[in-house]
Length: 369
Image 1 (cartoon, rainbow, N blue to C red):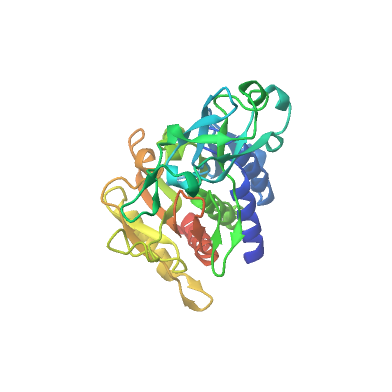
Image 2: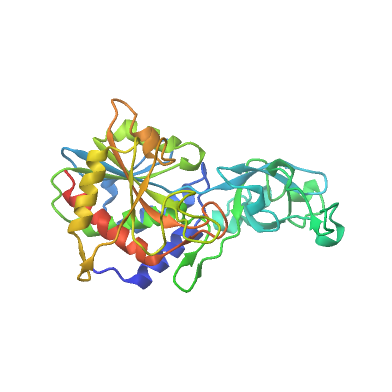
């Protein structure tokens, strides 16, 4: 089935702009369930487990191949509200202080004034306050304005409330939030928070559309996992339940093709050069080599199919790290989409890489043995 680039971008925008911070994945899970029905998945093929993992059982047989993409994103949680109505927060996952200071943020409030409202109607906007340059307390040796970054627990969110009493009508301790999201098309790229790992979810969803009606000869299960950003908690439970023989994570990886980094810092991964196949100790090399062989057999617009290689010398930092050592263990592989500026509000990817990843996943889903 021919992939329409505009449809892919539109669907990616929908997935990225839907909230789904680790532990609070219900909104993005519901969107994915709705999209699964559009690609031909029936209700009896779908299961949601106790940790909120979304499990899609496509076919039965051996080997049982399980693909995982995490639907959660980094964000923060409200930890305190002071007498003036300012909120104090703590990060959920790898969100750094520098990437949230002076940003507009969204909190999904659960105060009494918002009871009974849909989650998107419970959005409360605030700003993470920062001292202006005019009144910075510290100066550098040359007289320029400087300030040491505060710790996350010292950041304040200003909602414009006048008191704690007013604030608690709308927000409560334990409410989650994230940086305000903009989905923007650049010259040859797309930027938006939560591309990690909504790009993986999108790729799995559209690859599944290609194979859902095929006679797959082996077992095939797709899992959209929860809580990856806080320790791959969802993948442990999912793997224990579905018992994969082969588990393949589909995630984002670091592109280093910009002036602040180089291949010596990481691996020579670039935007626009195709999906990334990982090799190293957490990867079963037999499976990685089979995936590379399938990639080499793909004909894409009468040209050689482009893919890239990366290494992992220990933990991969993805769902396979724990999924592959659950129960008796399973073989593992990792296919990734290049991403610049991971876990910042300006995560950036290339749509061609996503299209190539979908094509590779389709081949792997059907032909991997």
